[in-house]
Image (cartoon, rainbow, N blue to C red; front, side, top):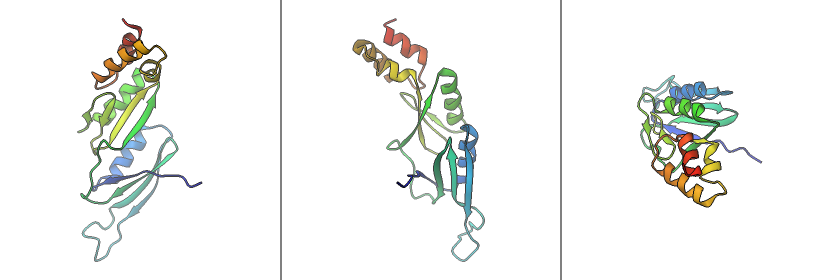
Length: 160
């Protein structure tokens, strides 16, 4: 069965984004960079990255410098499962830095416009927990959050 590789569209910063993403996630690397050739149709882009292939924790991605024709939106997001608050905060702070934007309910937009969901394991145990009333309280708490706060979700679930 073929592997599916997400392709992220950039105006002209695919290489910088791939370098950032691979520095953020463990077991990640850039695997190949294809560059625009020198020629009459290069429009001044000769030598600049066209396609950057990279892996984030073993998942293959491609970043394409396709120009300003398309921009990312919330219709597609990248979900990052995390263990606890410290790991959540590390990813959140890095993704929002240098022009990113905090979203609601654990979503954050990076400086290139891509949306990420930073999802702590406690989310399933609270919002998806077996106590329906606790899950509803946790859901209400989550809906009022930007960055998820694990302790607050747990308190809401417990009814504290």
